[in-house]
Length: 327
Image (cartoon, rainbow, N blue to C red; front, side):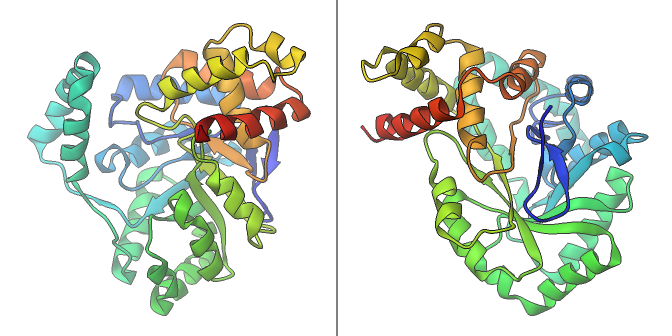
């Protein structure tokens, strides 16, 4: 798989990363390990997790899986959203909750709202940072993380001199190679503008319904910054809306003949091809979907390794996707 430099951070990884948000959350241990194993075998070398993922358990499973492979991969994790300690009955109930979500899609929003209440957001004190980093290193079974992201911080947190000094010390000590911020797309420009110079990586949602993150990095002095996109398929109803957009594009009289030919069959392969490569055909270095099913993993890897469209065709698709979204 193609690899890219992550800005000027000195890090290099596969253009497709593995998002670990589903590990031990919506997906159980056995399926999580199966997905991680396939991702590794397919050449994915970047794994993105967080203290809050999997109710605080994602890091430990990832660390166990990567034991013996650590020198061949990059790991990013996050701090600032603290998971509540799970009582035994809540841990035991998770397989039941997963089954309910699979069988009753209409219950997903209610369940997600209940899950969200299990986390404390905006935790950016020095003490929380210190304990969170040590916990992450312990669970990941490593003495350093490649990228440590502040997880959805307010801009004011980047002006906390005591916290910023602690972050800088963690980097100087070697426990963190690169420091970054994971934020919403609409806050990206503001966060980049107020960041200390030693914060050099940014993770944000970017999909065909909201390419504003790409526009933000095009209009600020983002030279040398590592840029990583998550939620490329939009989440929720994003996939269904993407199917609709692709069908419109495929039927458009304005489409070049070769583009129309390549879009003759609107299937999962075409979906992955357009979504992932529209994002990667920009200043963004890596894209990080949460791929917990084998067919999604294989399809996404094939889409970035064997693209159907030329660079000029991808530019046409991007322009017209933006236009169709706005209609």
